[in-house]
Image (tube, rainbow over all chains, first blue to last red; front, top):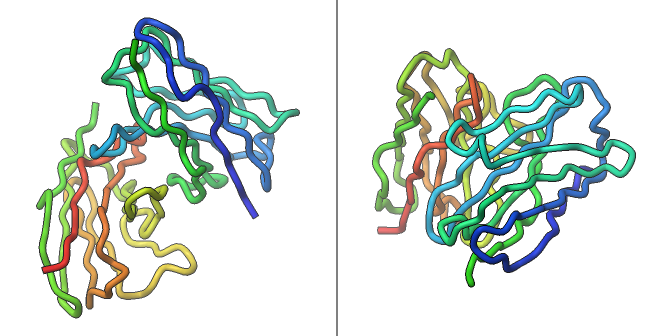
Amino acid sequence: QITLKESGPTLVKPTQTLTLTCTFSGFSLSTSGVGVGWIRQPPGKALEWLALIYWDDDKRYSPSLKSRLTITKDTSKNQVVLTMTNMDPVDTATYYCAHRPPDLYYFDSWGQGALVTVSS
Amino acid sequence: DIQMTQSPSSLSASVGDRVTITCRASQSINTYLNWYQQKPGKAPKVLIHAASSLPGGVPSRFTGSGSGTDFTLTISSLQPEDFATYYCQQSYSTYAFGQGTKLEIK
């Protein structure tokens, strides 16, 4: 059974850097074809894909946010970390991490989400 | 950058109705198109992947079709648990989502 859980601060100040950790079980990020992605959703708004890291450390970013995002993995700890710089109130959202199955192109398991509020 | 446009943005229907939601990509994405269902306060759940494939456990009343730039999600006979928001997602280049379609009870 695959599980994922997001953790990090619930409140950040404008201009600060957000660091979120996705801790997962039930799969290994060293398995060929596997990926872990981050998706966010502002309150009452649509889903927005942010980033994806693959088993081979290849990384993909949303073009509109690429300059602010960094995604990394720690295979030994079963964790994926997303950092987002220069936070703004418009970045207030629920942030989800999700599992991409080997060699498939969708997210089949999701974390419960973590609400991050950006406010001074 | 491939943009995904869903229509309608909201839809009212009754239990038992057949409903169709469309999704258009700004350029061809072959069949790299997924559909998700999201209920309030919950994470999204995949309904369809690769335009027309149902993952295990998804009811057969959900069908997906299309290729290239135009795609549809059809629910053949709405059930009470189907009232939710639906998102398409392209996985051809990035994993961008459409803006969503909120399906409400009439």
